[in-house]
Length: 316
Length: 316
Image (cartoon, rainbow over all chains, first blue to last red; front, side, top):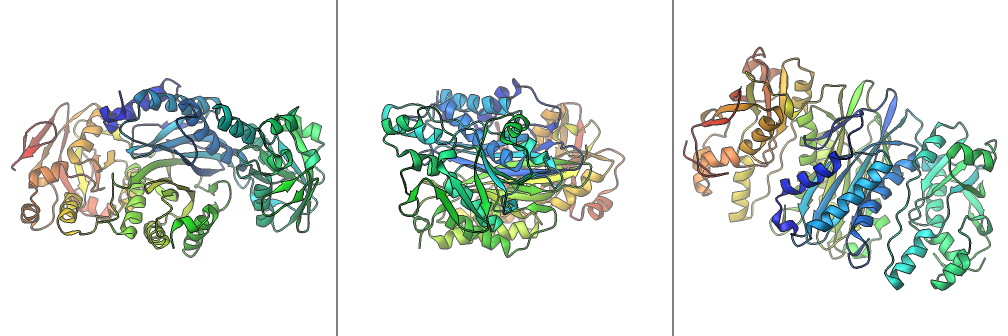
């Protein structure tokens, strides 16, 4: 059976039922099925909202990417934006567009993937839209809440701040390179929500951004917004064991992959000079963090790499 | 110049600049340009969120619909959902997808249309996404706020409630029929935000929905959610002067157009029996309202029309 056999209400009902099986947390006053969802933040909270889209052919292909991973990825990318603001999720909406010949089984797998991440992140699916279109696309809006005035921003880095990053870099670029060669699955990032929320509560937090474009590009956004510069050392960048060998097997340059790989959705953040040690930060944020450099007055100096044009890097 | 000449940052920058010229209200803590927008509701407010999409070929065609109207329509439809919940807007996000050969002039006209309605409704554009796709689509998420527990719902109609509707019915169906014949512009609805907010504050308010599918379909949603029935009289349905003649010129059946025309985005709402008279309601809601029937225990009786199948109606 394909989508052409379902009315729009039929699609919505299918998605609604799958979502209902996951249960509805108490802060959802009105969920799927009314003109809009109603969510209840706590007292003295700001509301955080971010929209992201995953488009067939531009961001995924049915030939290589399993439908469930596509659904997971769509929600994970939006929730990562909430993490970068230090917000906890209240709910997500999904606008789904797809062609009439899309198998309903594939819609169900995408929905299951969406709900996997919604459940794992306590971000209930509370609404959305379905429409016919020639190519499939998923537009996910994540709505969250953060203590009043505590949202983490790009423009809050100051000279002297230490620069840190969560998790490991280059994982997504490696997964993509492998997918190109052997049809392996896409990398589904884990939104760093707990780490972002812990950071938003800390008095020593500076700027924060999630790594979607790649470390150099995203650090550049922070520097531009904050009107400062940075010095980072590639040798300090967190990477998996055997990263260099894995890159070589995938025909990737290791330094370039760490600096510009993109789509890792780790958090890049700065802390004031008096902030705790890395070991204490890891306990507070509940995740591995690596200190990769310092905020300076201006410019971007990358130790261990030689720029070869706008986005190229050579050697360590 | 077309979109293929702009980077994604180029698109965003173009939209951001147009939005910045409109000014930013104080409740927008962080607007376009960070990982997410931060909006500040008042104390003791619930958050309302709704997502709607406008897809090329399915909902509009460049051949007949001016780009600025397409932009207006996309935002108006989402804000109408906030109106139906009784919410005031905090902000909107827009996910724009379009092909590389889309003229930048058309993107600018769509953006101008989006911002026309954002300004008129005090619903600032606070974020979104841009992506390449074969066909253009606009996915708009509206975020608003309403007094805690005061959101208007579909499931709040009770036996004995009076049924009312704002404005006039059939306007959109007439505009669409004319567009088919002479290339006239699409109907841009005016979201009934002030009326919805006034209703949400009233002690005598019942259920509320905005009319997107058509009166019979949307009233059906209210009846189903509230587990009640209704009796309505087509003769009481609000229509423009000379409506019957205009329908005949457009080859539309007048009763059917009033009952199932769709996309009028007026509010259909119920009030408890002791609510004020229509004249007083009009003053309170700031708009013309018409009383069209009563909520009963079960069933749907439409006086003045004969059903001819699932969605067909004959005569008055």
